[in-house]
Image (cartoon, rainbow, N blue to C red):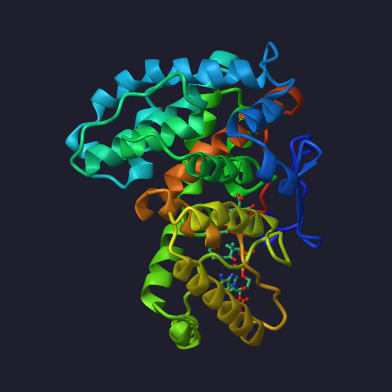
Length: 362
Ligand code: SDX
């Protein structure tokens, strides 16, 4: 048995390929670098859903449909009571999505793509003591998310930076949350059920729960001079360095550089303090060096979460919401894999080896 199903092929897919040795990610045949610098959330969503819904949906139609869906779904925000608002944002998000009907058609897919984009900003504003901002159906998903979060229209740089992030994390092979989505889809339970299972997997600190702790780490380190000592003490405590290591990548996660690139226009526009990037770069170098020393036989490099933390912080998302923003982007990957599984797969039902006690001889 392979612990953690490491290296076990559990599906064939036409959606994405993660080459851990080469440090390469392709989505529907297009390299991540090209996609992250040119695609919008809507274009990558249309690309991933292509051929997986009962009728084709173009990028333009998707943008319009998502705008209408965001407007319709805003009414659900009223059910955010004090109990839900007392939960971490991703848990409150999960609870709101649980109210949506299950289904396997395009309508169900569009509803689930729009839902987290409306719900998360509303949850964050209510938790901060502000009233939620109503969606604007005319805007793109990224622009409307930022507008609903801050109450102001975002700059072009900010919208492009969020698009780059949502594109970069839209799909990534058979990661834990996507595998969860496929397992649920294989029983034909429906897309809402797949997304709920996937969000529940994503929130774990070993998976999508890492970017918030990355920011905590950078704040705790404070300056480049402190990096090595702080990191050594963390490893001595048996802790893992958030934002480093990956089950597949044995070299640098290509999304790390794509997100670093997406930060540059925000730095030029003065929306990110250059010193924050410099601190992150010095912590990154110190972490790579100490991980090489401490784990010489295990290549541990920077993963997607490290620069995600700086980008989402720069866009005004509170760190406790980063997993929720990850869910906004990854929902289209979860849905695409769920549809691929429902259309081409069988019920997912592996076997286990029983190692428990045998019945006493009669
Ligand atoms: C994501 O799968 C995906 O594609 C996920 C993702 C996606 O897009 O969906 O890419 C998103 O989840 C990125 C990863 C975010 N998580 C973190 O940054 C948390 C910190 N990283 C880890 O905990 C770890 O690297 C994992 C969970 C990501 C991968 O762990 P594995 O492959 O199960 O490796 P392992 O736990 O077996 O560790 C192997 C060795 C261990 O040393 P030993 O106990 O054998 O001596 O490497 C060490 C680990 O202790 N190790 C680390 C480390 N990651 C692994 N040591 C310190 N810091 C780390 N970050």
